[in-house]
Amino acid sequence: MRVAIIGSGPAGFYAAEALLRRTDTVVHVDIFDRLPTPYGLVRGGVAPDHQSIKTVTRVYEKTAARPTFRFLGNVCLGRDVTVEELRQHYHQIVYAVGNEADRRLGIPGEGIARCTPVAVFIGWYNGHPDYRQAEIDLSVSRVAVVGNGNTAIDAARFLLRTPAELEKTDVAAHALEALRNSRVREVFILGRRGPEQASFTPPELKEFGEMEDVDPIVAPEELAGCVIPETADNSQQEKNLKILQSFAARQSGTKAKKLHLRFLVSPTEIIADAASNVAGLVLEKNRLEVQPDGTVSARGTGETEVLEVGMVLTAIGFAAKRIAGVPYDEKARVIANEDGRVVDPASRSVIANEYVVGWARTGPRGLIGAHKGASAHVVEHMIADGAGLEARELPDREAIDSLLRQRGVQIVSFSDWKRLDDVEVARGERRGAPRDKIADVEAMLAVLAQH
Ligand SMILES: Cc1cc2nc3c(=O)[nH]c(=O)nc-3n(C[C@H](O)[C@H](O)[C@H](O)COP(=O)(O)OP(=O)(O)OC[C@H]3O[C@@H](n4cnc5c(N)ncnc54)[C@H](O)[C@@H]3O)c2cc1C
Ligand SMILES: NC(=O)c1ccc[n+]([C@@H]2O[C@H](COP(=O)([O-])OP(=O)(O)OC[C@H]3O[C@@H](n4cnc5c(N)ncnc54)[C@H](OP(=O)(O)O)[C@@H]3O)[C@@H](O)[C@H]2O)c1
Figure 1 (cartoon, rainbow, N blue to C red):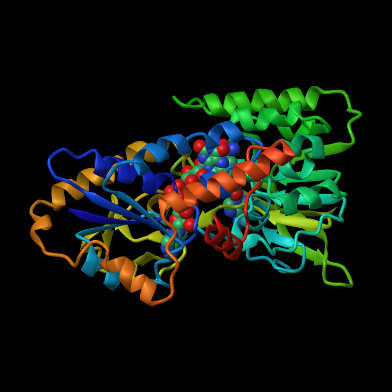
Figure 2: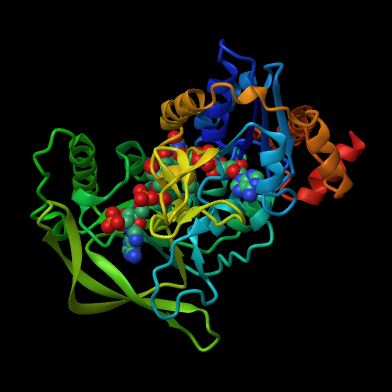
């Protein structure tokens, strides 16, 4: 059996492992990535100051060491190769392309200079090649981060870290330099609903209280009346509330930087200055409304205020990007699927031998570890559906490589990646960091040409 997996993030690697562990048949897995580097958001999203999370890549290295595994980096589905070509060269295809599109607030002023989707900021400090040239202007003193999830927390924490805290991380060198000169002193995290509805996880929230030069600030009145629902699984909300209460009870601190957590406010307009840069946000106060199904939503009260900030980062979720030839669910903004089997979005009929895993299947929900079981579950479907498929004769395994090379694509193998990895780690040692990333595809290919 020969399987193509598109995307080498956690979901793709866990699917590969589940396939390669099969004992009933030999599976050859080719895992493609549009970048020369593997691991998706583990490399390009997970915060550089959370290095221990990144050690999960050791598990993926073991998968990559299996004899029937290949990594074909620097190959983009939809640019370098088509779905139709993959169908000719593989028995089954797994899309593991993550959620690389942004969601928008849809309010006036969105998109002016210094109003940026959070993916740009995160990709920039993580050395993702897409964002190497992003214009992140840190000459402002106050920044708003919209959204109450862990991505908002990561962005806010990074804006407020001291240079000493950042130097020992694998933050990209260009970002480290800019953050060293940053004038940001105050960050406001803005939630449209209440503290009980925030999706932060407690360890991430708590970290604001442990930072070198940051005082976390919560207005006690914003916590008054908070009621934790009596559900079986409310421990996250309880813990979050306790942490927020401890922040609210603190004496006004003396640290140079402030992190404000605000709740029940929605931005309704981004205000520009004369040079068309962000100058502030109009915020509408919300109240909570319980819906008949028990969900709690935010409703505007009409009461507004202006929050003066010089930059806005929107951290309100992500969506799958459309790829030519891959069925797309416009409503859920994921690859159209039924429990991981790709379907036609209109008729919902199954497209044979095509599957989807990870965030491309579910939307941006869940931590790295959750993909292990979820990808294995989809592989169960692949096994159930795939009986006898291996009898279909395919071109030689390397025929896909020849096709790509004819098009001028420089395929990056896993051993090429390991050479890049060594170079990055050696560069990092010089600055006392775990690695110093190469943040540019051309530069990566040039390094491979030399080493
Ligand atoms: C900012 C941020 C921080 C996070 N921090 C943590 C954390 O600390 N701990 C934790 O457990 N979880 C964290 N998560 C969640 C975790 O990163 C995700 O659950 C996980 O990465 C999703 O895996 P995935 O494989 O579906 O997608 P991804 O990791 O996004 O991988 C998708 C891969 O597909 C490739 N690709 C996309 N399009 C194409 C194409 N057309 N052709 C070829 N390749 C393509 C991409 O280059 C990428 O390598 C974080 C998420 C974000 C956004
Ligand atoms: N350090 C970490 O462990 C880490 C870091 C980053 C991400 N992650 C994980 O990655 C996943 C995604 O995290 P995420 O933070 O990107 O997403 P998220 O948890 O879904 O949070 C998105 C936030 O945006 C808000 N939002 C959505 N639309 C909005 C709008 N129009 N106006 C105002 N607010 C709006 C949501 O509010 P509502 O709730 O009201 O919809 C929610 O608070 C999660 O599983 C997370 O745990 C983990």
